[in-house]
Length: 323
Image 1 (cartoon, helix red, strand yellow):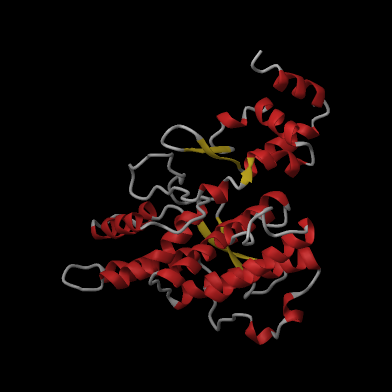
Image 2: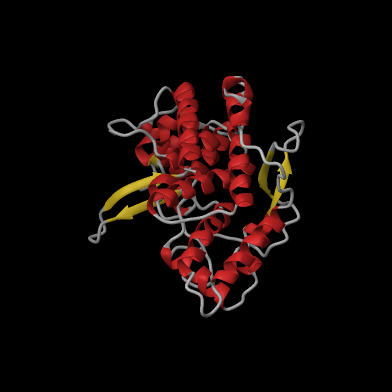
């Protein structure tokens, strides 16, 4: 998982550099982090299919868990992750660079299976049975169970759009839910929506994990700020990845002036939209950081593209806002 995540990070940075000419913010020493790269390639470059996002976020989280924690996969679950990853990698390579993955590397190194799993739900249910068995009273396999739960929790959260690894509190909630005998569909509602999708023309081995349109599991949502109820409600823990566009940089991202970026932010009332705007303040109430998300960028681009849109009106309204 470390190598798979690193491969994706390098590919995404290559795509961004080719299209944008840079992979670091002005004045920053380090290049974009993996999560920022995923957001840019999806929201700004439109090169990443929204259906592939959950697996990429899961791979990112698995990389972090492999580096800093203990986690474990069954062979079937590991194969689904890696094979899905290779499928997505091949699509991006073809879309952005017109290069065929099997032509770039020996085909024997692409993950294959003598019996590739074709039913995601069956694989997940076997995982749940194994975890439940580890958590039976009298057994000292709690840490082993956590290692198996961690990647499941990461993938489950990724289905909701979660970008960061599960916390220890969330892991303990999952363990507690299993010990209480709760149905796994209610502990991991995101996993209940997944299915194995075969890529057209790709053969039996060319698969990816996708969210089923049928949606067998219960409704899944992100928790609101400060919300603590519920068994497993996920929160995005790093606002600097999600709201990575500084307010002063918004105009440049749209190809207009900084002032016009401010004016458009006011015109669209983006500061009133928590999914578009984030502000961090000091204890004294002074503003430390103001960031806008990919949603804000999308809303702004759609507004500018409207035939009725007039920059003169937007600038005038912004100039007169306090009069």
